[in-house]
Image 1: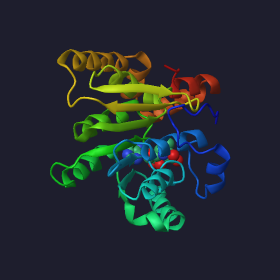
Image 2: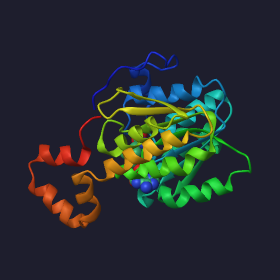
Image 3: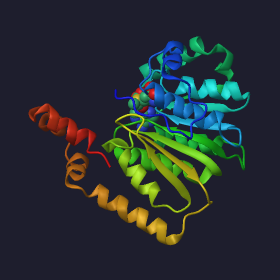
Length: 259
Ligand SMILES: C[S@@+](CC[C@H](N)C(=O)[O-])C[C@H]1O[C@@H](n2cnc3c(N)ncnc32)[C@H](O)[C@@H]1O
């Protein structure tokens, strides 16, 4: 995985060697990305109380580092959503073993984000708001948008939402969509070739015009020929076609070009 620059507004970013040395469970983010999300919590002007992650995988990439940052702050709780049963079980065991001191700050949630997030949001105390979100779940680009739509009304003004893969098919819809909403300040950081998206909520609601522009852009992206093929062809047929294509072309079609 290509390692890019740690953004300069990331004062608590640890050096890469230090992060890697402490890494005891498998994770998919590179050292710069881990440092970047850590810094978003350590350097937040208001301490993170409620943090939510979608797509923990085995826990060593994002989960462990978010938890360590909350523990260092001395406040906050992380809820981590994971849809694969086997991975979920390994992740919960990994986290208990790796950060026992912060285990009581962590609640794993098993299930698909679109099913479990509405339940999780309903279970939050009335008036409670979300401070920090990290999205790194499924590969279907609509999923991050759906997760954003569910979560954004409960994210507090000043709260931060980050998402992985902003330069690839998985995350570029979200980056374009939220980039057009005028109640969010957004940026994509090239810390890896996949890119990390960061959005800060600056107003409770978008203007009607910006909401309309974002919706229009999303519809256009969903109508791209490759997306229509992916949406309407049965997945075994898609798989067959992709396997028949040269590897580079099939990777380009599934991962998508940069934005
Ligand atoms: C790219 S990995 C996450 C990597 C992890 N954030 C890390 O830093 O190591 C994506 C994970 O999301 C899970 N996943 C996929 N779709 C999901 C969904 N709709 N809801 C929750 N988890 C999902 C997968 O099982 C997988 O473990």
